[in-house]
Length: 406
Figure (spheres, rainbow, N blue to C red):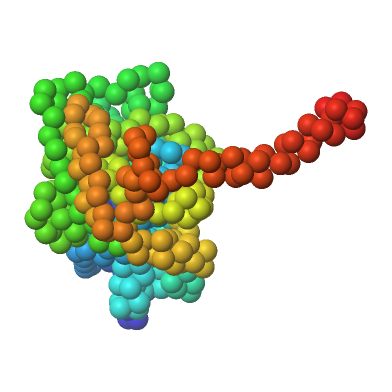
């Protein structure tokens, strides 16, 4: 008999991918290989190997992607200052391309003809997975069960799993859809689907609810080199350890909780609650450092770039010429973003408490309200006359009855 063709599944051990293995075997004549991408879920992943095998997988890969995730995806996005719709720090968004990249690599190694994922037909993740797959290997067939099967709800999926004795991490009584990685933890579904419902304290699994956080503030110092964080409180950490350390510090003070109704790429508004303690600290610190190291024109233009960069990441367009070009621009702006930032953390607030850099453009002699010998205030008169000349000309034209408002 000829060997069966292979499909590689992006496997998490959650509800959706737990039932996809038997579904693929029941509906396709493929050998199913599972791939677990470790992006810092914070749980023991080795038990997933046995679970996947018992569910019908012929082989399981457990891939440590944490370092690649941080250095090739998180840090470039941090340097860009990219935040989707002003609040979302893109935790799920940039985890998908690093997982999909390894999915393609394993499919090529195994000689698979197809890959599969558990993203729903309503969400953004299907786009993020599939755009990455198309960019890296356009010949692979993509199977998206949620767009094909008769299962229509999480309740249906739970029933399907129970009928096949597949253990699952959710129940009908606690139906939140969660995605966790080194950067954040997201919560969707259940009572959160009504935007009027305030998230209860039980929702938060990383952060201390701000009203329960310590009554005394804590100071944290972060050092950057060319836009990359390298030290926390004077201690050097590798990239993964640094985020883990800041997550620990920020979480106990309730830093990084965001409740947002966001606009999904597919046209649906979705309510999500996110916990991103370390990321929030890093974004706040990086923005502070840029405020003294970037000139006005570069800073303002970079703020426009940040919006577009965030959209590209959110939309799954990591492997596009534009994202790569914007990253090249961002990298050029970070040459002098080196220095130290101090923040005060208190009951959910990340409060600026000091910033310094050897490349600081802030000049106390120029900025002072006291007496100085550097700035000639009389020079401002000529500047204002020239800067306001177009307005003066328009006003004179109106006096003659020829202006736009006459």
